[in-house]
Length: 229
Image (cartoon, one colour):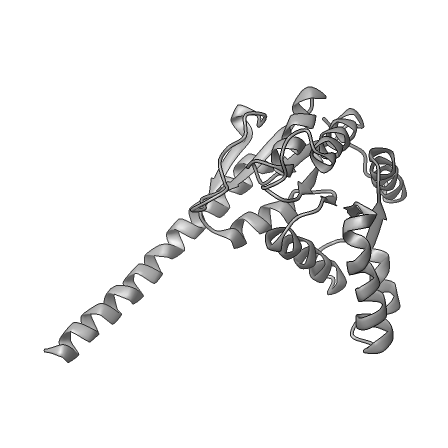
C-alpha cells in the first residue's frame, strides 16, 4: 500500500512538472509579445526596500527621468523602492515606463508609475530575467540586495561568455559598489586570475545622472544605435 501511495505521489509530481512547461511557455510568449513593441529601453535595478525621499531613491528618479529625456524607455521590476523610483522618473519625464512584476510572498507589489499597458506579471524569476536581458539596451544598477546582485552577475556572465551582445552595465554609487569592484580586481583578477583584465571593462562605476546618460549615449553612438520612440 505504501509503495502504491509513493508511486502515485511521484507520478503526480512528474505530471505537475510537465504541465508547468505550458505555464512557462505562456510567460515567454506574453513577455515577447508585449516587450517586442516598446523600443530601446534601459533597465534599472535596486533594492525594493529603499524608501522615498532618500539619497538613492531620489537619484534613481533623476537618472530615469534623464534617460527618458534622452529617448530611451525604462524597465524595472515593477515593485517598490528603487523600482518605483525608476518608474516614477520615467513617468514624470513623459517616457515609456515598463514594470516586470514577480509574484513574491513579501515586498513585491505594483507601483503606480508603470504604464497601464506595460505592466507584466511573472511567476518565474528565470523568465523575467530573460525579458530584462533581451529587451534592454543597458543596465543601471543601484544599491540593492541578493536579487540585484543576481541580475547584475547574470548580465556580466552572459556578456563575458558572448551569449548576448555587449551593452553598458552601470553601477551607481561609489560608496556602495566600490568595495565590490576592489574585490573583483584584487581577488578575482590579480590574486587568482579567475577573470581576464578586459572583464573589468564590462562595468562602469558612476555617482550621478549625467555620467549615466553619457556612458549610454557614447556606447550607442559607437554602435550606430539610437532611440526610436
